[in-house]
Length: 143
Image (cartoon, rainbow, N blue to C red; front, top):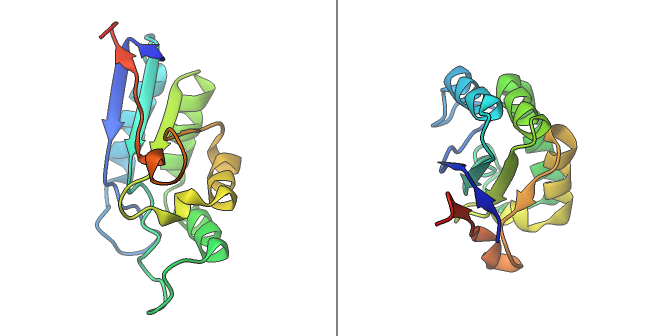
């Protein structure tokens, strides 16, 4: 099991490319850069519902890998500062973990996960397979 000195957890951001619940891109990017600059052995966990794949989807169409990859691209275009800050977290050798949330069917698809990794770098996905990807265990400060 991995041990970290510091663990940061974000949850339920529901980031969209258009009008949505999330509107704090600059603030989030600042906090992510703080995580990247931490001298400690640090992990950042985005604990589900990171990108909102449902906003703007056509009625009756609940999942499509191609649409999901396009959504990631659109979100990056709308919030480049967040993607740049996540890249910095990874470049500074901090562990980035993304777990599958209750609105995250899309992260179950390898194509969609790879599309995000190609944009920001190496991600550790939640443990296990299927719904177990909603789990991440570690120790912090030996506990």
